[in-house]
Image 1 (cartoon, one colour):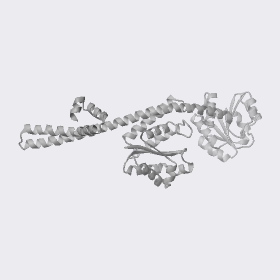
Image 2 (cartoon, rainbow, N blue to C red):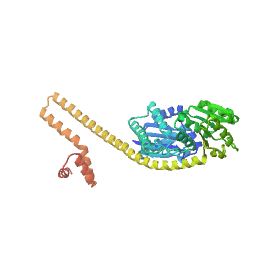
Image 3 (cartoon, rainbow, N blue to C red):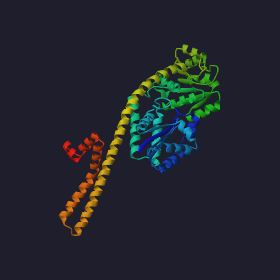
Length: 423
């Protein structure tokens, strides 16, 4: 049986195609059910996020069949998927799922969200009955590998987006970040991302100020934040310890004078300010004020570049961990194959024994001589058990495969001269 991973992601396909092959929660259930009905597929897991769709299956090596299934399920051209996808088998598939779970294959190197998404995908597959013993072992081991990577390397330690960098910087400046009041100026994607990071850090008091009040209200509703208009900034600025701004304004919204008045009202309690806008939202002269700490997008970009370099080094360490742990799983898989062979051999031997004993018992009941029956039973049982190994030994000798002959001899506890007698 082959382990296969068929995928499409942000590196291989445009968003227009990724959208077409993404699975909704409802379609995921029917997709897993569909895979379960396919001949030759024993186990399956589907991972579907905004940046990737991946199908993992254990079964016959029918990559073309899997590609056709994905195309037909979504009503997409098979060629479009083939031209924009990747396919991994066996060892490569094991390493791939471990790399994905560890954040090494993500749009943002080391991002942690993908691990939770893979765990959810695995649980969905379990509930659908498409996970067996091998995938149980593979994915549980993958989760432990991702945890090991995160704990033993610096892959996720440093901010690699300006939004995250802004929040991390605020966290360094204010030890008790959840107790601080934060003002967000703007309501676009960058501010939304900043808000998400702030909520993850436990910040309780948030306010959103925006030119379009309706948009500010929409963002504030999700955050449990208060809403301000831009005209209210001069009267409320002093209430906030942290100000993070990102708008499309062509002129500064917060000037040196406004901040100076706010600091006086705060009795010179420091303010941390981050300007993520281009053009700037906060006048650069604010930095001249003793208790105002202003960082621009360029300052944060420098931090991000340093952190990306740090994550690249961490990624190299992570790759070593993944290679080692992939080998651990593959060794387990090989051991399982050996166990299966032993089980099959024992079952076959027992069946032969039971069949011959049954015949012997029947012969005894018919009154035949016991000694002759025992001799015949021993002869036939020995021949049955020796037939397979003897045939392989002869074939190895004919093919001049001395390594196989030696290995079989050791397995059957034969001395070299005894092996020669067998041949």
